[in-house]
Length: 262
Image (cartoon, rainbow, N blue to C red; front, side):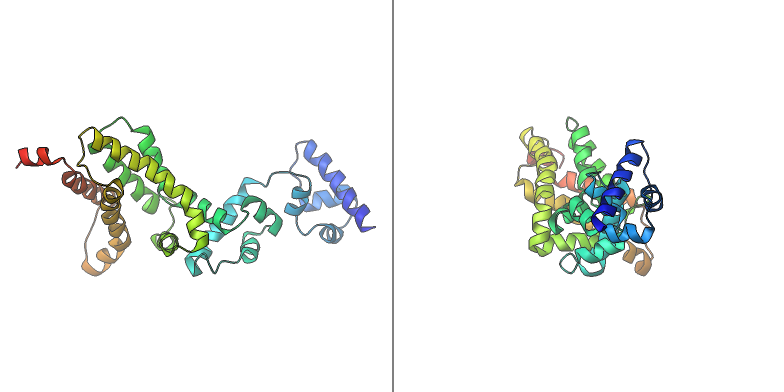
């Protein structure tokens, strides 16, 4: 009897979907001639039904999962995050969660891709790869600031939690961050190396050059609110990170150019 009910629900849901509808549980149950209680005996959730029909999850499901995961990582870190609790907070089934994010490494990689400055920075380098460092590096700094403090951006405290996870080198965080770290090094690191080869930047290890650029900007972002509250400083956000980028550019000028300018 239960199998027949399940099959009837599946058949009616297929028909509604084929007609271009995105039906609710109530509409599916009504079309199948069963109660909502019977529906939930056959399927744990609407998402489980859609999974049985091989229907891709709605885009909103992914957004809800990532938003809930961001909060949970901020609360207790990636290691303590429970995938079951994440499904509950997101209002989706565990089957849908694991179809979208097979495990914590995939989840963390998507958190980084969605909420960190990595992709905006890569986009800047890709779109400005033929322009000089004096133009590109300040724009990278602006992209970082806008990701952290721009409209709708997550709080710096939550981003701090994400980067602490990366620095902790826990297995899940390391696996999730590996590909994205390679992407950012290939884009920004590749650009910096090309500018060194062309004589526009001082030659040094590109990783050290990136650390010298990123370190002061992130330190500023992490301490900006504290400096404003405790010291009464009124810092203009984008201008501050652009000034730091220009300090880096000054330090990275080739030796001959520095000497000629005194």
